[in-house]
Structure formats: structure tokens, C-alpha cells
Image (cartoon, rainbow, N blue to C red):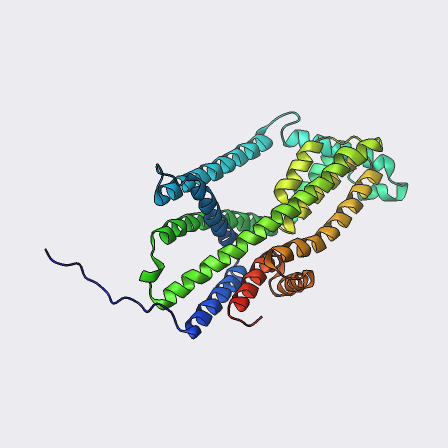
Length: 348
């Protein structure tokens, strides 16, 4: 029986310079992903990898092998993602084609009612700033869309590309989860093995930051819930959709910076339906919480990656200047990875 072709076994340890090369390549790859607007794909792939690892670890048993557990985990995560996308598409279709209070018509009527209530509370000199009725509001929207058609088209295209990148990232994350499980690191060449180690280290940094972000989101949601469910009712203010706003705050809290902006905007607009003073109060409260959360973020994240709060803040400010909002989002993960890498090499 002919023997299978074999290759020489790689050395057990790679040269130090090769580990530094792998480390530098990993950092460069992250900057490339941020600069080329591939951050959604990168985060989606990391999230898929971590979810598969977490679910598979609980499924492994005499019945489920490690590989089968990972396959089942990928199928479960994929089913959840597809379900959420389907529900989102159905909700959007219902909003666009619905009638009464559920469709765009109901939304426009609700906005018109809010405008009427707002105009009653505003001084006379401020009334010309607001549309007089629903038809004027619609006309303003049409005029704005006509004058900003290029920007709206660009934003829609960017959103479409972002969703495609997220789906591709999820697929890549699933493929990497299966590949790394079936790969023996000792069978790899030195550089490939060093790169695999750096990918694992970056994935670990991502898991630490996600855990910290969960704590931050819990604190933020708790404070917002106390304000909406306790403080405002005690003051005689009863807003609609309070539970929905708390849920939106929790879900969007997992998206750094941008998530807070979305949830804060929703709460402020709904508060405007009661009065301008309540909207101003809500906005002031959310701004204060947001500023406190900014430092809390640095404190909690720093605790998870063994870094001081001022280190995280400097990293966030620096990355924001380098790459804008995407740089701000990736900065805690990148800083955790770089600091762990330098510690492992005895530099810090």
C-alpha cells in the first residue's frame, strides 16, 4: 500500500521576530478593516466566533463531539440571525404599508399631534420654526428628500453594503470556528502558528470588551428605567411606550456611542409628546448619564483588561481622531489586544 506524502514537521517554537511580525500584521489588519469600512464584518465575525465557542462548550458531551457541537452552534446562531432579519423586514413592510396607527400615516399623525402640543408650549417667536400641520410636514419631508436625494441614496447604499458585510463576517466567523477546531497548531508552519495565536488573542480581547459592555449596558438601562418608570411618574408625567424605550436602550447599548445616540433620540422625541419641558428634562438626564457612562465605560473596560481609566480614554480619543466613530468603537478592543501583546512580550 503506497504511503501518503508527508512534510517535514515544523520547529516547535517560532523565532521571536516572527511573533513580532504576526503581532504587527494583526494590528495592521485591524487598521485596514477600519479604514476600508469593514468594521461591521470584523465585529460580526468575532461575535459569531465567540457565540459558537460559548454554545459549543455547553453542548459537548458523549452524544456531541466537539465538531458536531460547533456545527449545531453555527446552525442555532444562523437561525436566530435569519429570524431577526425576517422579523425586521416584516416590521418595515408593515410600517410602510400599514394603515391607521401602525403605518406611516399613523406615524405622521402622531408627529403632527406632537407638533401641535409643542407649538402650544412654545413662545410666539418660535412658532414659525415648526410646520403648521401634517400636510406642511409631509411637504417639508418631500422637499428635503428632493434636495438631498444623493445623500439619501448614498446612505441607503452604505446601509446595504453594511448588511452584506455583516452577513459575510458571520459566514467567515463560522468558517474560522470550524477550521480552528479541526486544525492542529503544531502541524502549522511557524508564521501561520504565530498568526493563529494572534487571532486567538484578539478574539479574547473582544470577549473581554463585550463582557464589559454588557455591564455598562445593564447600568445604563437601569438608570434609564428608573428615570422613565419611577422618576417621571412620581412627577406626574406618564409617557407612552415606556417599556419599549427601556428595551431599545438595552439592545442599542451594545453598540458603543451610536447606540446611545439612537436610544437618546427616541426617548427625547417621545418626551416631546408630553411637553417641551419634559423633553428638555429627558435630554439633560440622558446627556448626564451619557457623560457618566463615558467614564464608567473606561473604568469597567479598564478593569476587564487590567488598564487604568485614563489609558482607555486616551486610546478612545486617539482612535476617534484617527478613524472617527469606527475608530472609537474599535479602540477598547484594539487597546486591550495591544497591551496584552506587549505584556506577553515583556515590554510593559
